[in-house]
Length: 477
Image 1 (cartoon, rainbow, N blue to C red):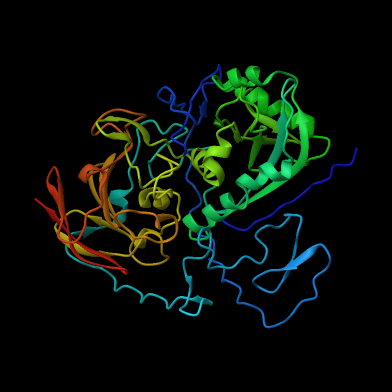
Image 2: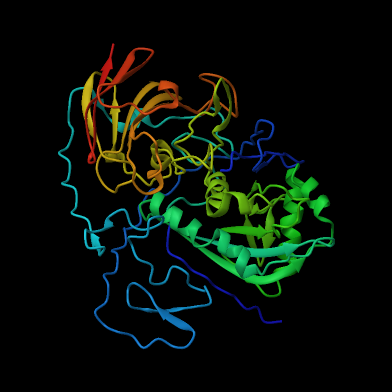
């Protein structure tokens, strides 16, 4: 039978979750309800290609009027776009509140215009700064999830194009009551827009959906139970891939997403499968392609919406969960500032440190400090400028500082300002003060003008603040 490749390509580029279950192959499944602490495997480590992808230039509104066909509409850019959602990013305004370009805005007349660019910051060659290499944290046992600068092997590339095949599978006892298109619209184009925004257009996620409900052989409860082990979860995804293989070409695919019907209560959450991208008894495989990264959805998809997949894909990129803190009054270590802690938080994006190790920030956008100094940080949600200050305490631990303003995915922040947090690559899931992979200081509050926080021998003070960013003074005693 001839395979037909159905494509939906969208240029771009959590829930408090990650279940990690290990089967005989000692790899990891990251999930969505708050599970037991993650058990990490130890695949070999390789360096990630750090060459950034050039940022695309937003297309200005066209002066031409197109005669669009019956099944098309005219988008913001003037181009004719299909009404069947096969290219749902077509013609989208760069001023869209979520997923639009941070470099465009509505003016006083309601027109979408490009912002005046921020002046390039003067190089901050000040006493107290050192080579950024000193801030590239390591980890003794890299594992499949890590906050070390060197990225785990077998995880998704963090820059350039990433393609995920999307399959839709219901169960022997539960049939879908919604169309695949309706369910897919919960995920897309929000997920693609998220990565476009958070990566400053360095990661381009595209989905390739096969719009047919495939029927799995077992009950929903059976597959819900399968989520508790690596092998059970892998076999579920492999079964769906086998059912679709006559119609879908998996050659060269980076990831697979298997979407369950939201009405299947026997599958309450959707975790991430982290395996191998080469020949291995535990690998997913189709059309000669070994696929290391896959995700399945559960009923929680309708609760978390289009931010659910960016949380799970965060695991596919090698990022750990940041929830599970046993700290009084705090359910997580970084909320409300991170999607990897709480999908429903006020600022559901990635922390600045995470963006750096994913190569979405360049080394010259990081100030690595070893003595007292004053630096100016631009808002994390904008492109360009100095984004992150780091003070290393050891090869595996550092203090991180970033500016968070009410922009983009941070627009719902109740209190904008400077976020200071610890990064410890040796810490795992959960724990109390000082035991998480990241931990926001100052009782999980931003620092406002004139406020300070002290950790060990370092005091951080906000000296100036504006919508252009924050000037911070770091005192190292």
